[in-house]
Image (tube, rainbow, N blue to C red; front, side):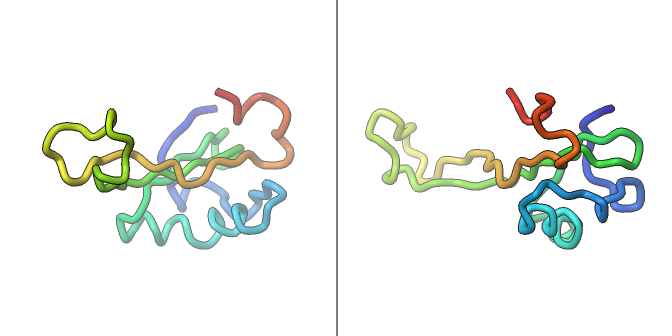
Length: 101
């Protein structure tokens, strides 16, 4: 079992079911498209082709003036950060610690 970038030809996305339709459908139908358009990067926890869980991340930024004064870094107008978009585990593996820190 390992965490690796989603590979549609390797990972069986269609059997993934986390119990939340929107999150399951995202992996099954849209994650690969978003990766191809460089909107996000999707990583899966997988055992061979079986997807146990996944998360998505993308680059984002916030205008410095929208931050508390003690967080407004130097002269930068936009502060970059990594946005964790989705994080979920297949129903068969929920409660086993895979989504914990």
